[in-house]
Each structure stands twice: as C-alpha cells, then as structure tokens.
Amino acid sequence: MSRDIDRRSFLKLTGTAAGAAAVAGCSDNGGTPTDGGDGDGGDGGTATATGTPLPEPETREGYLQRANRVLHDEAPWIYLNRQYSVYGKSADVEWEARRDERIDGSAIEPTGDEASVRITQSNMDSGLDPHDHRETPTDNIVLQAYEGLLGRDREGKVVQKLATGYERVEDGRVRFELRSGVSFHSGDSLTKEDVAFSINRIVQSDVGGLESSQSDQLAGVTGAQPADDDSAVVVKSEGLNPVVFALFATYCDVMNKSWVEENDSATINSEMNGTGPFQLSNYEQDVEVVFEPYGDYWGDQPPADELTITAASEASTRVNQLLSGETDVIVNVPPQNISQVDEADNADISPVPSTRIIYNAMVYNREPFDSVEFRRAMNYAVDLESIIANVLSGFADQTAQPTLEGFTGYNPDLDPYPYDPEEAQRLVEESGYAGAEIELHTPSGRYLKDLEIAQAVVGYIDELENVSAEVNQRDFGNLAETLLDGDMSTSPAFYLIGWGNATFDASQTIIPLLTSDGALTSLENERVDELMDQAQSMSGEDS
Image (cartoon, rainbow, N blue to C red; front, side, top):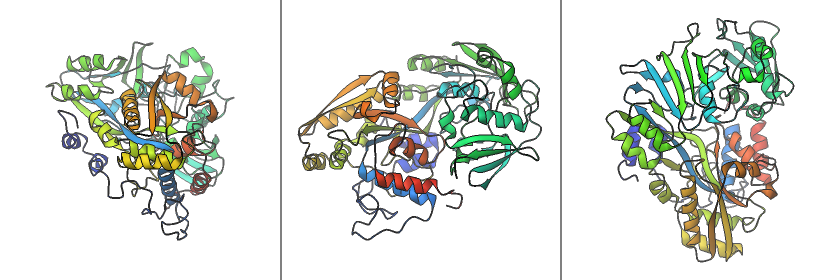
C-alpha cells in the first residue's frame, strides 16, 4: 500500500464498484487451471477437469468468456495490472475522471472566483484533424469541439450524441437516425451527407484527402451512405460486425464535408469546425489551445466560459502547477506525489480504473516460451500483489485474463495466478527449459511506472533457481514499431506493453493481441481463433 493512502481511502476517492471489487483479492484456486464457472477446464476449453465434453456457449458473451478462460490457462502473457488514471484537480473545480482516459471539458464545473478552466496534459496535440491521430492527448483536445454519433458517459455506458436512434437493419447494415437542429461552428447545419462523408473519410483511403490512421478503429466498417428517406445514415460492414455500435460510441468524430473539401491539410490541422460544446478561440501550436462555449450548441452549455489546454512533460512540473494554482486538472499524478496532492488544501486527486491493461507478452513459438508450462511458471514466479502495493502504491488491479472487469466478455470466475515460486520452479523443470536465460524488453515512461514494473518482474523471475532474467530498456517508439510491423518473428520474445480498449468489449483486445492474424499478436491457438470466430458471428444483442 501507499505509505499515506491505503486502499480504503482509495475506495472513498473513487466510489466505484470496480474499486470495491479490487480489494477482494484471490480465491482459493488462485488461478490454477481448473474447471471454471463458465465450464472450461485446463485442456484448452473443450472439457471439464473430469474430461466431460462441454456444451457450446449459447451467447456471444459466453464465447468471449470461454476464450478468456483458455487464454488464462494458456498463459500467453504474464498477466500484470489494470492501469489506473490518477488525475490531480483543483479545489476550485468539480469534476470526476472518466474510465476511458478522456477529459471532457464540459463536465468540469468552476466553483471558485474564476469561471475559466485550465487542463495540463503531458503532451500537446499532433494537429487538430480529428481523423488523423492515434494519441490520447490529441483526442482530449479535439473532443472539446468535435463529437460523434454516439458517446459514452464516465462509466463507459453508451449515450446518444448526434444520433438519436440506431438499429441493426440486417447483417452488414446498421442505421443511425440523426439529431435535428445541430449546426457546425461555421453555422452550417449538420446533414446526413456530412456524417456519411466523415465515416468514409476514415475507412476509405480515397475520401477527404486523407488516408486515416484510424481505419482499424472502425474495424469491419466498409462505408456509409445517406439514407434515401429522412435524416439518417446507413453504415455498411463486412458481415455482422457485432461491435459496430460500440465502435461508434468511441470513435469517428463528425466533420463538415464542405469545410474539409474547401481547406488544405494545414488549415484542417490548425482550425476547428465541429458540432461540440466548445469552439476554438485560439491555437498556438505546441503551446496551448483555448476554447470558448459555442452559443448555438444543441445540448447544455458548458459551465466554464473559457477552457485552456496546455502541457508539461514532467510530472513534477504538473504537480507544482496544480499546487500553485496555475492549473485546474493535471494528468498522470505519479504514486510518489499522490499524498502530496491529496493532503494539499487547494487540491485533491481523482483516480479511476482505466481501460488500459499492462502485460508481459511471451511469444508462443520462441524458446523457452513455446512451452505452456514455462509460461505458467512465469506467472507463478511474480508477486503481482506486491508490485501493485509497492511499485504502484495500490493504484492498480491485478489481472488474470486479457479482458478487464466491466467489459463485455469478462470472465468473473478467473483469479490471478498466485505467487508460488516453488510451483514456478517445478513447472520450469517440467517444461524442459531449466537454466533458461530470458530478457524482458520494456519502454520507460510510456506507462505508469513501466520500467519499475519490468524491473520488479525480472527481479522475481531471477530469484528462481533455474531461470535467469534481465531487463532491456527500449525507446517506446522503436519498440512499438517493431511490434507493429506485422512479423512476429522480428519482435522480442518477451516484452512489456500496454493496450487501451475504449470499446469495453473483449474482442477489441483479444483479436488484435491474441488471435493468429492479430496485428500485435503473440499467440497462435486454434481454439482461441475458433471461439473468437464464433463470438464475432453473433450480434450479442440478446446476450
């Protein structure tokens, strides 16, 4: 635990069911492959522990839960932790953090003498085109002025935005009914042509003068067209696309078609023309972005009369700015500064379980990780509970599967592997890889305490009598490029990485990371592929 803030204090701060569940700890089976509540045993999910054949699941969620059971037992990762987003906030604002790492300026209410709000991130934007980025800092800037068909509340529930209704017309086709009375900041009215254009600009490389880096965020979507009648848009997909509504609740900001076509890339990246509650007032690249309320916004007016977003790369600088009253909300308060902020008279912390999982991938066909026994041994070797308490000051949750609690497909019957170095050593011997020397590749500074987590993991593994381990610190950009080149053979055999999944659906973690054709996969397993294929063939709407 933190020296000054224990888990009980943290529960008071978060007030969330997820936080409450986190203190429950492990149950007696402690993650050992056994017959779970979803009926899967340790043989890859085809029979119980006694060998009785299992019936196939009846729902999409059942298939996802079974896939998580198989992945727990196959142990393609050392399952580490759910990252927490820990924000600092001024006593002069009322605001609660969101689970998806987004900061909605219209949800920040000034309560002091000033009616303005200032947010300090770790980085500024990479440009203001909402379809041409993949990083959270840019997202936090563009979402103040742009919005999508659907959105999410702070707990992740889907809410209506520019769409007031949505339905599955047939496999491969869904229909969104559009809100009336919506205008862009330029004064142009929102049309169904604007919405169809925005979708096509992301998924089709020949639309809107951009080959969007976000095409996979609308995975399966092939295009959109204005409906023949009424104010609606029909979205087309390859087949059923069971997560299409989840995707649109997270991605695809709507842009003004004529404005995009009339302007060049430099203008689109330095000006903004959305439908959101704030409109751009001033943009100074790499310095600050200033917003003011949009008077003709279709929804409630934001409580702040000015919103400024700036950045400071050093966490200590952000903390000092908060405590000196220079800013109202800061991101990524490090564990060593949490008590300092929490005990200040003019500031507090706002922590929330995020949608990001941190894990150590073990590439399934590289020695010694081609042995399931060895991979399980690595999970037993690590005292994850101690890492969370001592490295992360309690601001994290142990994981036992790729899917986080609260997501569709989470399997509640799986527990984290317990710390059992004797069992780890026994499994290493059984694997035939006694004496193995392994190297954990890790970034430093990309995730909360990532290097320190890696060092702790390696320290525990190195304590085993029959395995030695060391850390290889890597530049994040270089490591990510290696992992994303589509060739599993060129990636490190053992690495620490994080994955954020803002769709709240298991498939958007398992498919890219743990299926045979996944863009960032470390595993090929026929049973996992089969289960995910079955899950993706069902809508899930009745599950």
